[in-house]
Structures are given as C-alpha cells and as structure tokens.
Image 1 (cartoon, rainbow, N blue to C red):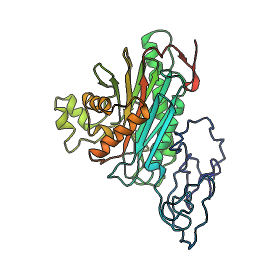
Image 2: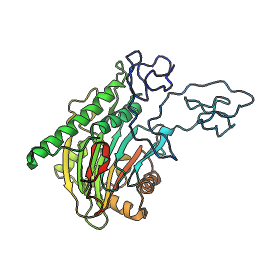
Image 3: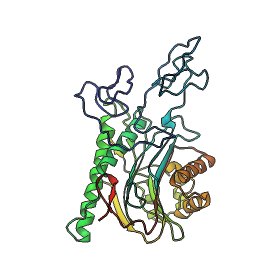
Image 4: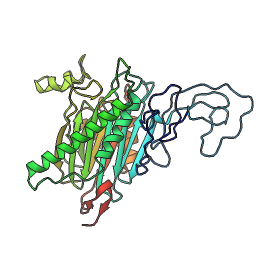
Length: 374
C-alpha cells in the first residue's frame, strides 16, 4: 500500500501515513511543495518513516535501482521498509540521524544517541537566504513509550514550523499590543503541533504519543521563543553572558524556583518529570513566550534534553560551543551531538542553531523567511 497523498509506503492496516499524517481513506490533500528539505549529504527532508517488514533473501542480488541506496552487506537495493530486498539485512534508518540546513547560517542535527533504540526527537527549520535575516527553529522531543511518539514529534514540529513561516506581527504599535499578538501566533503554532500529534496517534492507544515543544524565531537581532515541557532555547554570545531563554515546565524547575540548587533538582528522582506537554492527554497547550533583543554576535540554540543533560547551565553549554571551534552551524551542531554521545548518549539528541552576526541584519524579513530590502 502507498499513501494517496504523498506516495509513501504504508504498513498493512495503517490508519495514518507516518510521513505526512494523512488519514488513510480520507480525501486526498494536495501536498505542500514549498517545505525546506535537508542538506544534500543527508537528504532526509520530508522522507517517509516506514515500519519494517522482512523480505526473503535472494541468492543473486540485482543492481540497485536509481535513487535507491545499496545494501552495505550484499550491494542489493534497500527497500522503503529499510530492509534489503535481496538479503533481508536491516539498513540504518535516516530517522536515526538526520540533518537540516535551510541556509548557510542555520542548521540542525537530530540523532538517536548511543543508548536508544529509536529517535523520538524531531526538528523543523526554515531560514531566509541572507545571513541574519529570519529563521525558525522548532525542536520537539517525544516523551512517551507510545509507538507513535517518533512519528508524532516530527509531524508536530513541521506543523508548528508552517504556522511560524510568516513574520511575527507588530501589533498595534505598542509593546503590549505586539507581545499579545506574538503570544497568539506561538499559541497557534503549539496548537497546530498538538493537532498534528493527535492526528497521527492511534485513537485506541492506551498510552498516547506526547512531546515537548520549543521554538525560536530569529528576526534580525530580535529573538522570540516559546516553550512547553523541558526542551530548551539558549542565547550564547561570542563574548558576553550566555542565557537560558526558555523556562522548563518540570518538577525540577519547580524545585529550583523554590530554592533547591539546580544540581540537586536536575539529578533527583523526578528530574525529568514534566508538568506540561503536547498530545491527546495534554491539559494545557499554551506555551510560555519571551523575547530578547541582542546587541552582540553569537549563537541561538534550540535543543532537547538529550544535549543539555550533560551541560545544563548556559555557561556549561557556552563552553562546549566555544570549545568546538566551529564557525559553521552544521559543524557546530554535529560537535554538540558528538559531545552528548561522548558523555553517555542516554537520550535522543537534537541541536538546532542559527548564527547572529551584527551588520547583516538590516534587511526586512518577508513571508516564508525570505528577506527583502526595505
């Protein structure tokens, strides 16, 4: 079976397409051809995520068809279900480790990590071509053991990205009006992510998929972020004081707010118990929203707890960023993922980055993240 909307392979009895979220048997929707794709060397983009099914091995493999990757064991063709069509060997999933780089100054890496069997993290990025123009970083972390969490987090991240594709509103000319208008947009983005998660969750699942949510919009030197759960956003300047932008919705954060030292709260038995999330059983999908105008060059980082587990404070993360010696966001994201894996790799790792360089932000962002002179 294939999805009538996007053509992705479907598992037998599937109710939803794992790639685009379409309900099987529902009217066919026109796919969005304008979504950013991943980098050329890791072309995951919006590729399907298919459940594995085995195929009997064959004695003599045929050459792989154009566009299909060859099996590392026998050289045969790897099918859409990630099993070799000739020898039956399971190939690594692109979902285990994928990269996106929509522009030279924005990139991210999403990795399964060493100790996990699948990647329930997800990210969705967009950016204007001109450095410092406009970018959107969305990171989500599937937090349940539901069979749908990996699919749901990716569907949610892409849905939120589309809501954030347009420039943030200016309100009615007052700071209060702008803040209210911006909160409305981020609330809509979180709601869209929640709807996408519910749409790809088995309605009969006793443990429905859920996910954290963090998003940062970069417009020139203004950073605006929103957060639900314990994925985080940071500002790491080249020379100034680094900041954690988002505030966790977690038991650990509540303990910190009551006076418990961070190192105690974040290593206690409920260190990763969250108090808000997205999903069918969520009771509150309104994010916490904030903004910051920066005056020096640096990095915007959105990440899952698979990274900040090993460098929780802004100073610890800044040390990793500065110590990596990378000037390109893709290389820096890879270095941060490698650091987390080297420190244990106990949880899925996502690091999404945008570079802010002063002197390159005098252009007005237009819809879709593309800049224009104004």
